[in-house]
Length: 191
Image 1 (cartoon, rainbow, N blue to C red):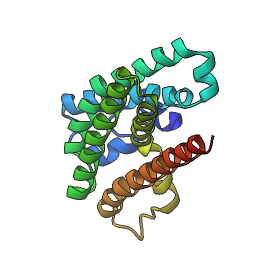
Image 2 (image 1 turned 180 degrees about the horizontal axis):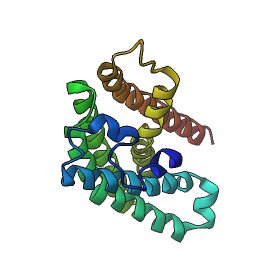
Image 3 (image 1 turned 45 degrees about the horizontal axis):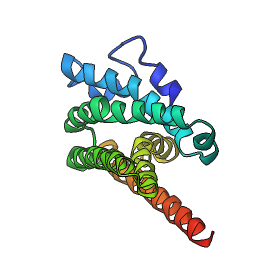
């Protein structure tokens, strides 16, 4: 992911993903949202790596809260609005556009739900919704893995593959999140 993001540090408009977005790269608003998203999402991805470790939580409660706040503010104030705009101009036709908009809505919903539950002191529900939030955060990684493993330019229609991949990535990540939540609940109930 960092390698992918690093290619945009030169702010060139004819590199990587932007090669497929030549219709919108001249729009300064779209470009601003693009750069805001790709550079700030790195913080969300890194923040989530520490947030689900019980050991880290026990030993670093204040740091957990601080990182969690950074994650939440980054998603709700920066990335959900940016991704909404980017989603409207998504590749993949209507399938890609609706897929990204659904991801964005779920991202906001899961993150806000996680906040609401921790404010009520309901740690299990907080954890569940933050796992779901992070599952949406990491769809970008799943998307790229699928694309790198399965996309063949001479065999696949790019727009169709892209649109399907948006949905497949979301389904894979949410399925993994629900499995983790279920497994966690089973372990707690056996204790």
